Length: 148
Image (cartoon, rainbow, N blue to C red; front, side, top):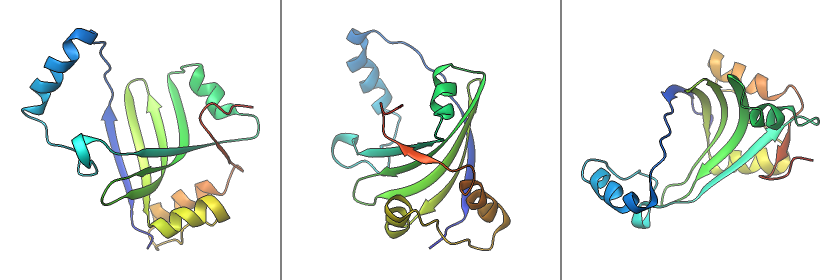
């Protein structure tokens, strides 16, 4: 399948909200926001994420230290009526988040997870460069909370 690489940037702003305001705040947002296309019932869907790190756990250790710049590699899927799968490099500088991802078919995702088979290159330079980046350094999958 080997779809083109997708790149985008967004700025993350996080604000605390009091528990007693959540229902009113959610109702106000619902007036102007559209449900996510991957959502099924009640606007919810399953998100599965598998992170990758090196043998020394340098990625997770750096992330926990909250540096100004950090990066990670992950495999993510969104469930629902039309599931989507992708491999993603995520880079964060201050509050700006940059993502580069390759959308995968379900078979490509299974091949990557269970057989360590990378998707085929599609002939596009950036796509090939992205896949070449997955070949080094040797990454291993890390389950949430598994930082041995």
